[in-house]
Amino acid sequence: MKFASAVFATLSMIVNGAFSMPNVEARSLEARLVADPQACGDPRLLTPLFRLSNGVKKDNFYTTSATEKANAIATGGYRDEGVEGYIWPTSTNGGQLQTIPFYRVYNPTVVNHFYTTSTAERDDAINNLGYNSEGIAGYVYNNAQCGGLPLYGVWSTNAQNDFYTMDADGVQEVVSGDPDGYVNEGIRAYIFRF
Image 1 (cartoon, rainbow, N blue to C red):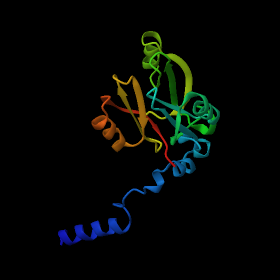
Image 2 (image 1 turned 45 degrees about the horizontal axis):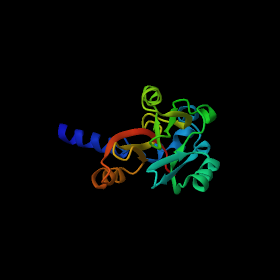
Image 3 (image 1 turned 60 degrees about the horizontal axis):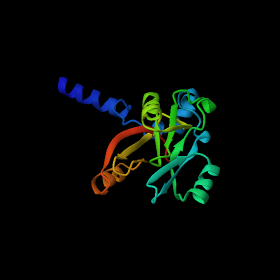
């Protein structure tokens, strides 16, 4: 009798949704915006993070500015590689209160753009490694709480080049197959893909 009661109670809980799977749609940025617009920001305010590369200089360049992108292609020898993902242009529009700056620095001697969310890393690159600050590329999350996806970074001492991608398989491909000896630096930020 106790067993039958336990089975009945379990079935009732299942029918009533006590053991239902979480709704994946509810975790999306758009769904969270409806539930709590101040928590994660308005996805309509995200801006593309363009990825460009220069094979001769072995530099990867990321920008949210269409003008800067066009200039890099026209005068800098860069090739357009599309949109890597989407980030916030500011820290205040749309309520994205949890965002952090994604700093951009550049070393003209080795021709390398470096991106970081760490002020200590940025300052070290400027004070000790010959980099110049190029300001803030945009604003990102430091975790996946708001539905952001990892932006991975890899670094090559041989090529003096940083490369960033949302493609985890691409990271492994670069690390294991590139002759320049890239090293996986892990997740550098959380951004969005649409």
